[in-house]
Image (cartoon, rainbow, N blue to C red; front, top):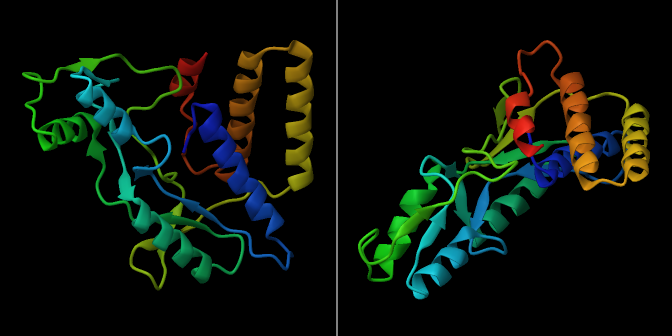
Length: 219
């Protein structure tokens, strides 16, 4: 939530589109939010393993960084459960447990491969990249988590922008402006601006402020 990158912004906009398409549609449109899947494409674990096999260092952006993790079987099972529970238009959130410090995950992997962290395999800190967050937010403060019949699947009750045509107009306007400027930076900034606009409509008056200081990190 409160995305500071193109990937995060596109995910949030996809939720809005799915919610609006579900209104009056015979098709059941639903979205599921969850954190990182261990061993999946793009997972940090294979990267750490390769770095350890090469003798290090294992690179971490910041010692304070945390992420939610679950295994591939857990993620698949819970996403399928959410599909069964949904009637259309819901946003589900999976119980991810407690967030894990990336530094601790790296240390566990180093020890698991028979080495001692920072003695035999060094850990190097590279600094937070533009658009990267120290921690994950799986919901807004204004969203209410409602129980479902499955103990690890929750349903989020939130606001909606209410006018898909207006949203589409804003999106098309953003695309035309970005194409005219011919800049990837402009596309990224306009995309995040659109997410801010949509979320301000969804949570107007809720006290949920868009994290502008984090958005600034992407520029």
